[in-house]
Length: 250
Image (tube, rainbow, N blue to C red; front, side, top):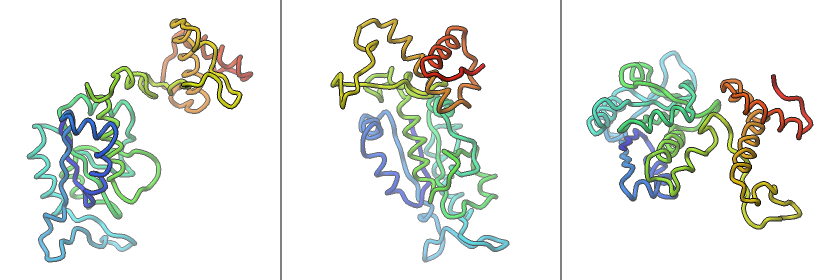
């Protein structure tokens, strides 16, 4: 997969690509990431890429001209038809379904905004879609770019040590992940649930699904509302609620 990032601060992105899962993906060639700085395309002596907004107000806005030249370079390096995606607070929420969609194509571009955003004309003319990683404001799009890259990269074949890890992650099937435990069996007086120690894999799968359903219902009911539960899943959720002493959802 090839990903191109348009950014005024390439060092921020490079740092995130140097370690962990992303670092291995880049080192093995499974993932290629290139960076394009709009400042290299600014025409004036001071490499100006921003200006005050029309209509007044605080902050600065990224100019259309340097962005247009940067995105043209990026599109030329990407596979034919690859989308260029803007990262902005007003974008469509980025979720696991979006990560899976992007992992299924050969590549894409990411435009990391800064300041008060980019000139709307550039957005309309040059960007295919916009994504947001959450309902909060960051200083720029570099961290969201790394979030998108990481979420997509771990879905690529060969990136994770065990490819089942991605399938079992939170949101993989619309549920949060179940609780995880490791050695020792008792820590600070707290034991590992007995079902995980008995070697009965069917019982373990059942317990994990019950915990995932219950955790999702308690912490992210919006996810459960979008997921049609089977009769077995509904029964497991009700069992979880009885054990927790709470009323199950209907």
